[in-house]
Image (cartoon, rainbow, N blue to C red; front, side, top):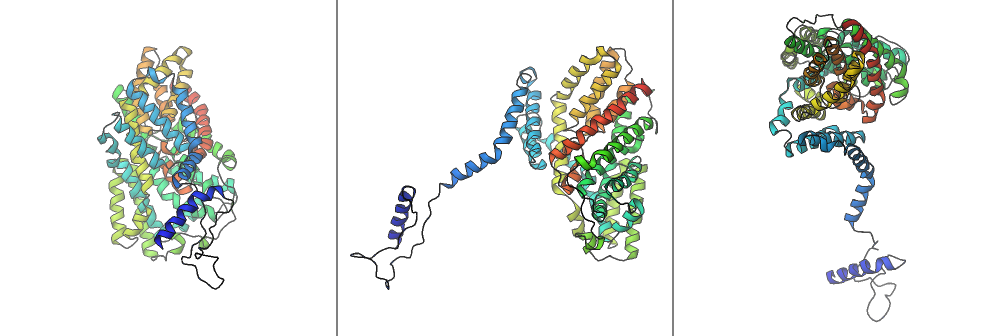
Amino acid sequence: KMIIACATLALATVAGPTHHSTSLPALRFRGGSTPPSATPLVALQPLQYSPPAPRDALTEWWTSSWKQLSAVALALAMLLPVLPKLPRNAGVTVVALVVALVQMSFDAPAEQVLLETVVALVATGVITMKDALDGFRSEGVVAVGVMSAVAKSVQCTGGLQLIAKVLLGNPQGRVMTLFRMLLPVLAISAFLNNTPVCAMLLPVLVEWGAARGVSSKQLLMPLSFATMLGGTITLIGSSTNLVAAGAASKQDPSFSMGMFDITKVGLINALAGTAYILLTGGKLLPEPELKPVPAAALPGDSAAATPRGALRLWLTLGLLVTTMSLAAQQPKRLLTVALGTLCILFRTGCMDLKDAWKAINGPVLLSIALSFALGEAIKKSDLAAIVADKVVELVVPYGQLVLLFAIYLVAISIGMVISNNAVVTLMFPIIVRVCESANISWKAALYALTMAASASFSTPVSYQTNLMVAEAGKYAFADFIRFGLPLQLVCMLATVPACHIFFS
């Protein structure tokens, strides 16, 4: 039977493509046709001819990837005249960053693209394996995970509705809902690091928006952007402001950036950004309004979980307020305070360890950690210094205002792929050198650089809160380009002339 089956299969494979019928007849007895009542020796199913599987897989891969490969080839072709003029490591870094950005623009997973890019940079010797792993020991990365777990405790104890009622109210319609969300976020972010603000409000806004017929995609990206806009209002609103103030004090010990010295420019920045979000959010952000859903009918842990009692609810809210207050007064102790809060929440039964693990988003943390390696590659290869030097020197003859615009543009370009603190650290020495050689005060340039570094709106990998909302809101890479890039230009047009007027 096995010999007959193999022979028949071979016959079907050879004859299949040349015959109109691909079915095989039943096996007949020797000497005549099979009687109607007889049973064939071997019961064979009709076989269908199909092309070899590897060929199908290759065709499918090419069909799904040719646009992406073509875009990469086109981008590299445009850079071809520039690459030979760059040092070897800078050229490799440019190629790696361009390939990564093109892949993410086709909605490839950010964590996968960043991992491949970092591996390529290590393999080519641009950075070491130690540089690649430095992000995994960053307090900022750990703080994102810990604050996400702390925020989960509010869901576990049933406090989402209470926070939404007190902090956000009950507005109607998309514009008023968005406006009511932006106001408290801007105010809180002016005095508190934006990572815990985003972690705390993200689950609240998903439920609160759905109850009002507003999609989370209309709220979560504005949440991330509002935390950055609010962070420019005071000195302690963002770690970027503190890094800039520290760098300036080191350069000139007589210089001091006070608590509210940045406020006049920061308010202009926040007002311009808020106006843009309210006016264009409905058109540029994905998904229209939804039908309002009662809070009790919403899916998810916050509605499905049984409340753990009023005492635990108020304990959780009290601990959350205490954590935020202490972090506002001592930003460097955010992680210590948050870890202590988490331990208390476990011991008092406000949440379980499994709830905390569910709240920690692995892909987001991996992406944030790997983005540190990209910043190190740009720094070690001198790519940022080369770009900033060339661009800034070209515009110096055209006056200080044009120089400030050039600084802002270079900063937001570099900030597409590295952290805002790294942008300030890399660019400030270059700015000082250029300004002093042109006999121009660098103080206005410092404030313009600080504002630009905090305008990380155009890519999901440019800032950690962007990565948090990108995962939760299921945003595409193009969503950030479409909504965030114009916002950067609006903020530039609003703040650069203000820096020139107030600080020149």
